[in-house]
Length: 212
Image 1 (cartoon, rainbow, N blue to C red):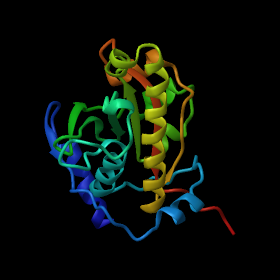
Image 2 (image 1 turned 180 degrees about the vertical axis):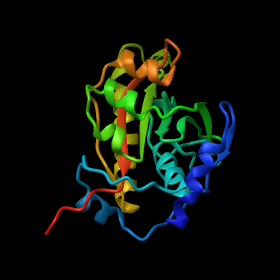
Image 3 (image 1 turned 180 degrees about the horizontal axis):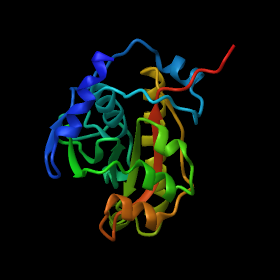
Image 4 (image 1 turned 60 degrees about the vertical axis):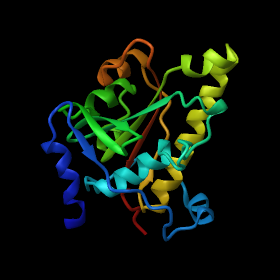
């Protein structure tokens, strides 16, 4: 658990503070083929915390910058990048500032309970160590592609979320996709501007092992 103690540094941040994340690794011990074969949706999580390096790796896989010209880990139609990513955990709510690979604290209270309530009472949203919440700013894509841009935004979030699911598996973590939630209630939890729309929640944590 000593390795995971760094996760507690998020608690020390004040609202508005930026917390640097561990630089992402471009190579791990699990192949992409192994991650694909092993990936399953997990809805039973232990109370174990994750590490800040694991959090950083998950966020990088979702929306991290992977080239000097600003291209990112997940593809996006026309490189419009309509997604923003938030992290909900016991130490508060954070916004991922991808250009700095850092988290900015949005609220100090643990938002996982309200987030689970907004997800129609799916309790594992509150029980997972963290949840990544994907938020779409549709105008970024629709300004180029019109109404078809709505479809492209939904493709974008699918690409990014699958990266997270596979990265979680490679880290020895479990994850589950959540699309059933009250949009307005999630927006209230995240304190989103009117043009920011929640589109996907990914709870991540250590899975409860099934008895043999």
